[in-house]
Length: 299
Figure 1 (tube, rainbow, N blue to C red):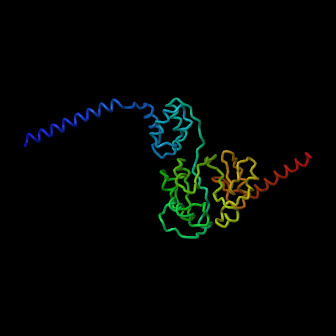
Figure 2: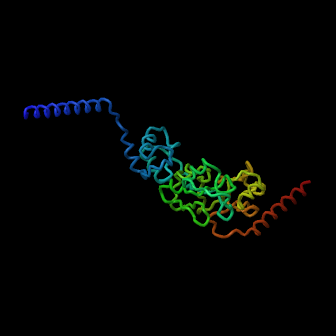
Figure 3: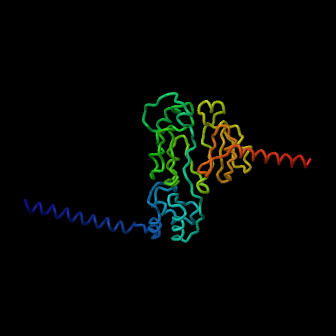
């Protein structure tokens, strides 16, 4: 009995040793040498694994950046320029500095501006709600209010305002990773340049209905009148599908579009002083009068 038990143990131990040796030789035969720079690059990265760079995680970012001929397609939004400078130094590449970005919510359909037309009692998820119907209000383009974007943010930069029912971005915590943009089924959140001292202009609406319909659905909706487009002297605003959009790469922060917008759909963020609409309108009128005078003289 004892001899049988001992024999069994010896056979199992021998088999285990043989398999271990076999696995070792197979591993040695087919092992892939990893670029030693990968570990150094990964050490520089913040380790958030948020996917904001477009890769599966920080390790994948490190592997692909080491294999790439340059860093034109690689940028870590969480670490920003300081991290990318470290990565470039390790790999011997040059990298261009990028303007810091921040998530912006393009909806101002507050609870008071968008009266409820029905009550949703299903799963509290924007994605689930969007699959079922347009939302709780007459605006089919507005925020659904379930907070999918808040849940997607790994940095605590988003929260739901109980008064407005809309998400609020904390720009000090936002890393521009883009997780919230992918989480919103209505595409209401986008990444925009923070702007000098955090100042920026935004059209806080995505409603593409015609003016009267949009205004009926939401008191703060863009009505597509085009006054902002006509006023902007920098060609920074376009009007498509009854909706204005500001190109932040062209915007000079003059706030003239905000002053002339009759719907209040354009807002300036983080400006040190409140907008004096009348003063801005007077400036616009003076410029138009001067241009008309020059045109008259040239006749």
